[in-house]
Length: 423
Length: 106
Image 1 (cartoon, rainbow over the protein chains, first blue to last red):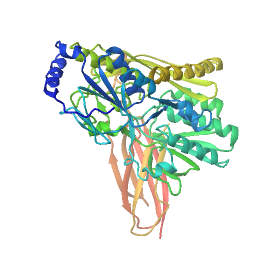
Image 2 (image 1 turned 135 degrees about the vertical axis):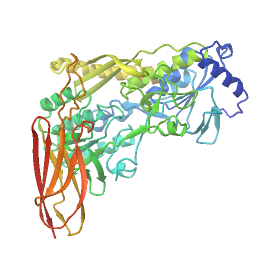
Image 3 (image 1 turned 180 degrees about the vertical axis):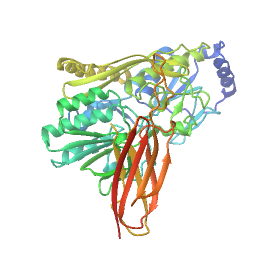
Image 4 (image 1 turned 90 degrees about the vertical axis):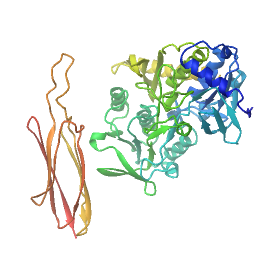
């Protein structure tokens, strides 16, 4: 359902928002005709839309998402190497709709934060009282010379699960033994910071079992990375001599690519790849920029208590798109942010001050079948930004039974988060 | 451990403008940081970088604490004749590293 109507209550709503910001009581919202739109149906947006309805059944909640099927990124590295099939990554919005959320299968084309309206791709418009942006990431096709959208077919980033994942899978399946798979990693910030290294492991696993003379080369624009010691130990233990990494200070930053010759260029060398997975720099999804919520870094500054944009009124930004301090850009973080943001919006609309959120996130890395490790953290606002207040990483010297348990834990985590969000 | 990366074209035509790139891995400790117990972490930086071509200095840079770790230089010169580029990094705590690369100019 697409609501196309004039916003007759605009001025009233504005007055209410102003008083909500000042944390004054505002009874008219408590009566429950407020409209909250959520743009983007990933882990962040879908969790937020659902939580809004759960917290206040009277809210009119819309979820604006052009894809009828959601394809999850976590575990998609396993699809690349045939450990898992794509349908296991895909979810629909039926249950979200059944929970009372109006799912609008459209892209948002424009946002007018002053008028509080969204223009959809089909030209219809939608008025809102509160808006949540959860647009995820866009790949910057202007940031790495030679790497544009056409190049991404030849050198798949596979950084948004779906077609790109399958493209990389086909290339790896079609590769001859003895070749090199090059993974180009951008500087931070990026979606799912440890995923390039998990990808390297799983590709090495595939090559070890099917094309044992092949190698994986990681060209990295960073020196250190998430769970580095665990990854490096796994490379040594599981894939000796198969994975090489050239870090930033070793000249690993990719400066351009030539898709025609499958060449990846750094300041100090040219590398020919049989298969190249080039992960370019990223930014917040495009609608964030259109709304004016992204700053010159390409990401969205927010108030960590309410997720309110620091740049545009009545817009909240969650998930990978927001600047969330020490919280990594990951599914569980986005989901936790979605729920906390929903609580903040409901509080603000009923004139209460939002509670300071305490978010927890988990991040599993599977480096071979039955072999995983993880990082978990608890994050709270501190001096205007999210800081990690508790954190735990798997032990480097843990026995294999623990890695197996963590692999089972990873599966359980994925089932739980997708069930909670889409089931 | 210090290690130099250099990128000099192996060949060039006489009169070509060529780009030279270098990277020296180094912590570039500013001298402004303190340990948890309050002691100053002593300054440890590269202080100078020099490039000579066939014995003549063609590029020099002084480095300061504000320069980030692993200093990277990119500069241009004109290829005049075949010969050898020599690079030298000097710094605190007796730091001294050299590297060289040859070019053939037609």
